[in-house]
Length: 142
Length: 119
Image 1 (cartoon, chains in turn blue, red):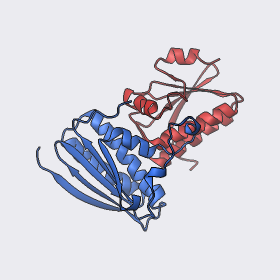
Image 2: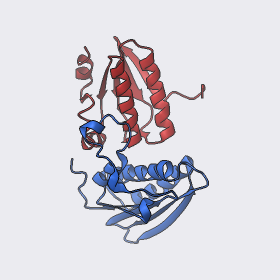
Image 3: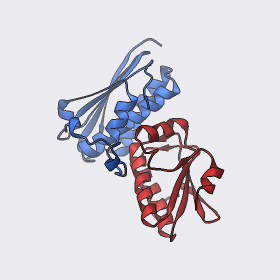
């Protein structure tokens, strides 16, 4: 299947609808025959991005929306997740692997996305995260 | 909430509580909270809890689930208890390694060894 599928999903900040949007995206990725490791990585990163948008971006306000914009080709999956929050600076996030932070229950989402995706970028003042996974990407490199 | 189906299977083996997850995908935060609450109850009911978390069948975990495991670990330690993890899928184990949580938890590949490791 060589065609590129570019789609946009806009959902209110409600868990059920966000999960449904994630499932829609993941199902389309399956149709492009990405391997199990790639699908695991994308599912993990997408879930982290969606949770961050819901919880930290939109503060679970159902009047705010999350926009998923995604393009899937046979060689690359690109997903952008945008919230309607105040934004943030990803550069100031503490290192969750630092010994002092290991027993903190939160703060690993961005690190996991960076570990599993080919590329991760932030824009729109931190309100948009773009996740890219290439088919031949070997990450994570533990 | 009282009628909510348990997300765990809990078996007693000697004085160890063996906890297995009913869900393959531990991503949803509501689910994670329910799991954490159920395990907390198990911890509360023991003096020095010994808990084996069996990840058989679990295919996906989010960082929120990892966070819940850390909270559980902290709670077990506060009661001078012991926590072990076993049967973690290779890809999920990689998540533990990447986040360095493989240094925080005692993770076993073998159930017998995990059970023997409790003092």
